[in-house]
Length: 176
Image 1: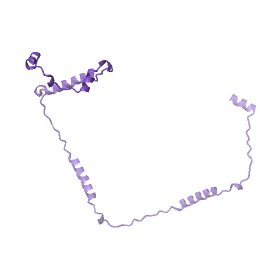
Image 2 (image 1 turned 60 degrees about the vertical axis):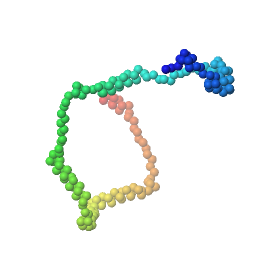
Image 3 (image 1 turned 45 degrees about the vertical axis):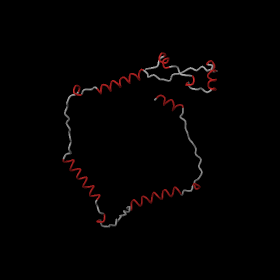
């Protein structure tokens, strides 16, 4: 039962000695407090309300969750049987795989100590006489060009002869 004014009177009001003591400096500050001296401040609420799109998405999500929780599998689903098809390899595939495995096993287990040592003989095939003669001719020609002395040449004056057609030749060409 909460104390009311009538109850308090019955119980009795607290005596001055039973009240809490306040420090004298704090009491003087509280008595001299002037609310006019306080700075004016505007309050800003920083509660960001969700947008209409956020509310719509949340509503869709809750509807989806409630739909999943309340789903009756006997009412909305039909019974089906699952057929598992196992494709086995054919006889040809198996034979190819066995052949490949046999080749790989043969290579892996091969012992090179069972081989005999051999010497490789390289046969040097010489060119025939005609090819040798052609190459010598080409080398002599190149050597002659490289060792040619330009000082042995005589100075020559080049005369350009540009004969212009006569008037009669031009007229004849125009008629043709």
